[in-house]
Amino acid sequence: MALEDLVMPKLGESIMEATILKWLKQIGDAVEMDETVLEIATDKVDSEVPSTASGVIEAILFNENDVVPIGTVIARIRTEESDGETAAPRPLSARQPEPVAPEQEQEAEVVSSTIKPEPGGTAAAKFYSPLVLNIAASEGISMSELEKIPGTGKEGRVTKNDILAYVATRSHQQTPAAGVTPPAAPAKEPPQNSSLEISRYSGNVEIIEMDRMRKLIAEHMVRSKQTSPHVTSFSEADVTNMVMWREKVKKDFEKREGTRITFMPLFIEAITRCIKRFPLINSSVEGDKIIIKKDINIGMATALPSGNLIVPVIKNADQLNLTGLAKRVNGLADAARNNKLKAEDTQGGTFTLTNVGTFGSLAGTPIINQPQVAILAVGAIKKRPVVIETPQGDSIAIRHMMVLSMSYDHRVVDGALGATFLSAVAKELESFVPVEV
Image (cartoon, rainbow, N blue to C red; front, side, top):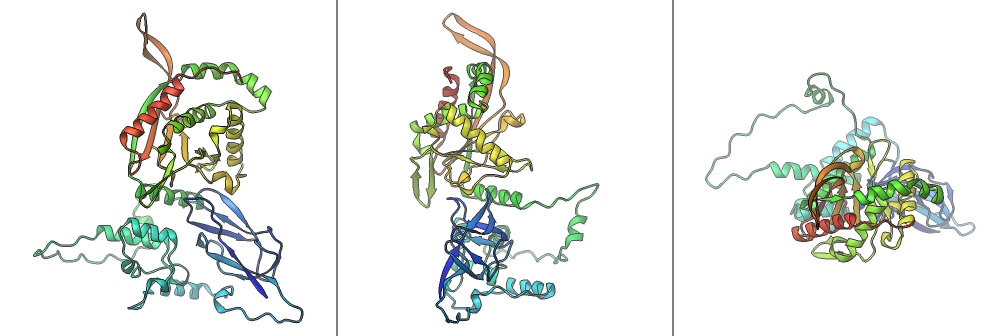
């Protein structure tokens, strides 16, 4: 008998874990190579995990709704068995957990949350996900201190929520100065429960539980702010030539190409030109190393009907002409709104563009999409009277103006580079030359 490990697949550079949504196969079920075994979700997209071998599901190691680190074994597949051979009993750790009563499950959670490593234990005795280790490193938490954090995860493992809760408590603790007597500890407050929590809100309120995707987005945004020191620069562009050209060609373009021409492909085209001039903008950080990406893959923030955002990626955007960009932009946007994006559609982004003007905003201060180092936002295009400089003198004219803003990681991108790049994009948009499409 041979066993094949099915592991949680890597779904992108910034994705360290995924949530199991649904098992489509159970223990004892036959499965073919590349047949879907389970559905998973990340903060970017829902996806399916195919089988890596043909055989029978021998063990399922995690339950639905469990959050599993990338690279972890989640199931085992028995791929072959000789005639007359009796399958060896599975080790206890590989068996599907036996169902327990709700009272027992609650008691088990309480016990697991109080488990601490024994004195003299080593780091190798406990498993820590890459995400937990990354948070520990960024917060200056030593391994000995990490071992003291009680874990509420499977087999007492420290989860992301455990370490974030510890960091929040730790940041509020203050060490008294030498010779100063610390004040008496305040009386303990009664433990909070749902009724007490609700009672804190006065007046006529409605409490809405975050859906799964909103929770993942919230965690991703908080992690980005904790990872990168954000700086935002602003610029302004006169996009009158671009607006007038689009208005002139949009009907013929849609009739001929079967897709709409929006401003997004025009913005992406300008950004890719500038990235080639300033390649450090198209990079990521790993420890003390800067990884400059040779491929220019532009992510575009897209609003979903639920109100959440997702970022599909246009791969090798610099190699597409305007028609190709338009078709790719519209195809990904439609797939996102209809929940038809594939996992690879959200992977590999090197720079992100978000159009806050779609919702009427003049400008925004976007949060960096990790592990990238910059994100650019374009605001609403508005007609305004502006001063026009000509050889004959200055004059006032009505022009289509747009504000651009870019947040960047100050560990890599200094203010001079960030402002210079943003100004270069604005000049590209202003110098737009009408083209035949």
